[in-house]
Image (cartoon, rainbow, N blue to C red; front, side, top):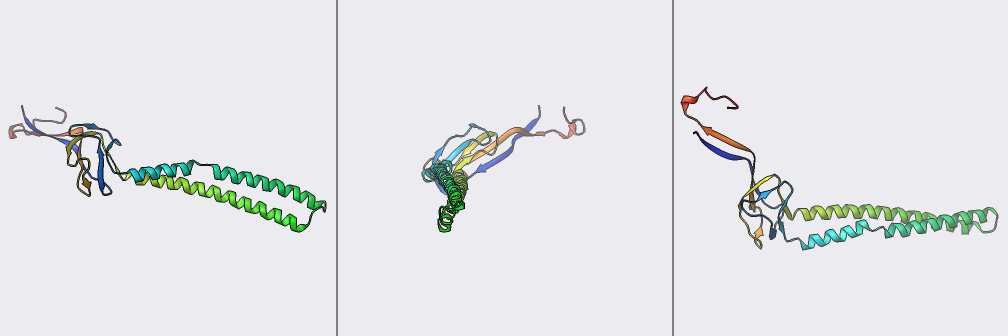
Length: 186
């Protein structure tokens, strides 16, 4: 038999993008991990609450619905007033006031749509801030080392070391007599 050295194809020391106290570590040395799996989390109660608040705002349609109703009412009023004005039953001033109310209702409706879009962007932002406090696996592999425990403060230092073992890199140590006698695939 020949001696050989077997190494993972990739080894990664994971740390956090932000500083904080470790709230949980979901894996231990020797555990198998998959790409995207949550491995550890920093204290993130405030960030999780911010995500929930932003989600509620982003999903709410009340402002848009109420402004649409006001706009529809204002448009109906404007049609009635235009008919009455064309029959010379109301003054131009009353017609102008009704048209202005309809234009303001349109602006309020447009503002509600814009605020909903902003709320959706704030929700995405809150989710990204929360993700900074979650350490996920960049690969399929195994936990090789664990340097931190729950409750410890994390800065740039590694929390975990992962190894990707598919494929493995194998270096065979062969005697010089086998030189040119070994071919690829043997």
